Image (cartoon, rainbow, N blue to C red):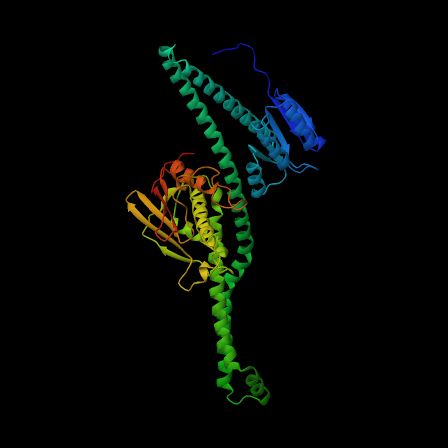
Length: 461
């Protein structure tokens, strides 16, 4: 192997952005870090510059005239000389759909404007290290193939060399996998954090007026009882009312009004208690971004998640409402990362709903065809709990079920699934909670996802 003593060439970075101020800022920032920087102001010029002298990394804006960032990235990935260049998107678009689209067209990372300088530097370093690791891996593979061909000539030394190259390859592949998992977790964490903030905001806005009603409706009921008692005392004291009072009470049907008013107050009490429960469920679910490990009630987590997806369980024009069947066992509180476990519940329940909705059009019109989501829990032994999610949707074919936990693999149509959900679920259950997550196809064609986690999970973060 050639061990050169010459210092490595500084990385070459291409900036593509139609805003001169952004180009000046990024160019100055990256030049100070020791990189060679070229800047262009539109997508067409960026493509020409990349093909004429391929850079080590491209920072690409999305909203540009003529060719937008997505189109530029697609053309880069279709050209052999530029297809392996990592692309970091820089954009003010912070919707999850925009980020997923960026990864689908071949982006390696995504930075949301306005960006932090430290974040740009770290992510640029991350992609350049990944690029270098990929180049080294390719070079090692070429060397390995050549040395295998010469096995008969240098058999003894080759065996030792193969071991060394294999170890290097394994280390590089491990580094590549780690970086890919980091990207995967970044997209998902941003999505779930946004959802948690939205739910927390809604719960906060609803809580104040509901708390006022909830705290006063009981007094209103007591005041109503007092007023009714006062009317009855008057009726006893003055058994012969005036003609005016008699006519008015007959006109409004006083007895009916008193009875109906009591019924209405009772309904209002039930309704406000229901809303109060919903607010508590929203506040429970909004703790998605909690990183600390803590003791939680898993049933409470499932219920708060069902509350979040309640609108998707309701009847649509293509199917009746989805029936949720619960078989809850006696579970102790589980020590875990509650925010992560809520993510798993949300993904598996939404996957079940998607599978039900993917049934052929008209399937649910039959009287005995009832869309069903079944959730069961039980304590397996003194130190492990099991949770099953079953549905009677379309299911997953046996020939691809081994791939469903792979990052970015999805059976859903373009734009509907990102392939992130089940991979994140597997990482959370298996890697973060030392548990198990498995899939099986049910006899009726539906799906079952079964997860098992320890009652006392060890802290990994």
